[in-house]
Length: 188
Ligand SMILES: [Zn+2]
Image (spheres, rainbow, N blue to C red):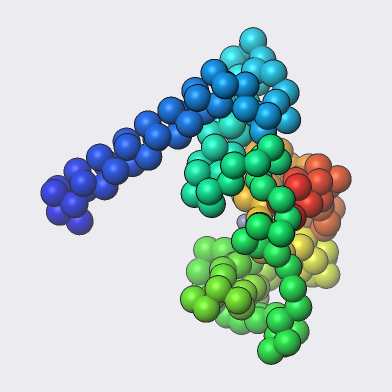
């Protein structure tokens, strides 16, 4: 990437951050109802940071999708991620020797209506051998984790009791916690 490109991208990033800051400040000033759903901004630094992060994310989402109502993420009928059954869908789950660093991999395909979940047999086996795990547990944990991404959950590097944590014990954590189920449900 040339310096010129990098500078242009950095300037855009700064503008986007500034726009989000303005949106949150305006929402606080005007006591916008969607923000009330977040609860009050706390005094201790850690809670205030997560409150700010959540408010910024919601503000950016509302801005992007033109949501103006009181529900933080809009009502269900306007939500872009409604789940429907895709008639051309097969029940394939790809398992192969990908030789990359991941155990499982999730990505939406270019068409936007199909999704790809892969398991890497090489790394799964290496992981099982290194940790004395049981094959079925690791496969279940990895598959459930990737489906978590498909249902809009992000990765955690810490919080080892969570399915979406990369530091979880894959022999034990093979399904989502209630918190993760609730988080995912809140998007739909
Ligand atoms: Zn992940």
